[in-house]
Length: 241
Image 1 (tube, rainbow, N blue to C red):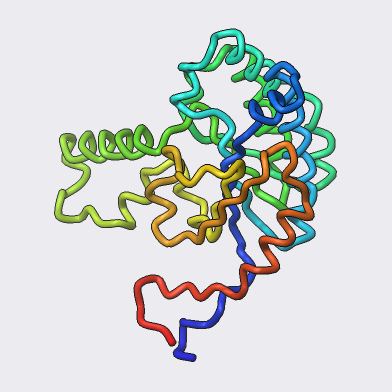
Image 2 (cartoon, rainbow, N blue to C red):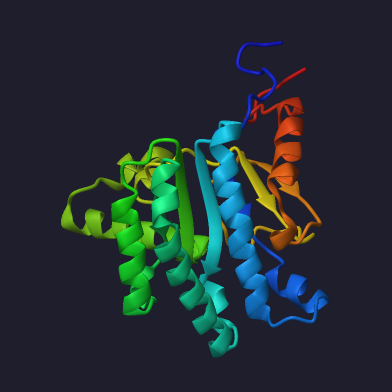
């Protein structure tokens, strides 16, 4: 093989679109909230499994900018669940060496939710086994728009020459500026789209779409996906054999 065109190693950064909580609950004739609770349990198991699989970065899509269109009662339940999860998981995350951070526009969140997310970020800052990034009130188009607005402001102030703008400069203005791009993006529930998630960062990501509904996504399912991953050849636009 040509230099730089080797088969993939195991992915360092995995991103998850956790889809199917509502359908999982509907199949069982349960309230949608029960699906979200089951989804939170699935996330707990995946977070615990990632360090065992040498995954160093895990980014999950928890709540999109479009999710505000849902029924207000469901949105409130989701926010309460997020706050409770953050509160109940701090000790376990610390013990497992997980560092938690959030991306998205957190200014729209209820003060109680925002405060709890800030607490879990602060209390897990020393985690060095897994970096868990949770996208909350996040949309990739909004992220890119905000980055462009920031660049425009710098140009207006004379801090930046437009000719100096390149992909690297753009990257530094994204919410994921200090994260590597995801090697692998997994979406559950059989849907075949990104839904406004990490549009810039996913330019050369590998994709895996599975029919499994998120609450049924177990560490074993993740392990099976990762076992297949090294068979892929990531060429990043170059020719390969």
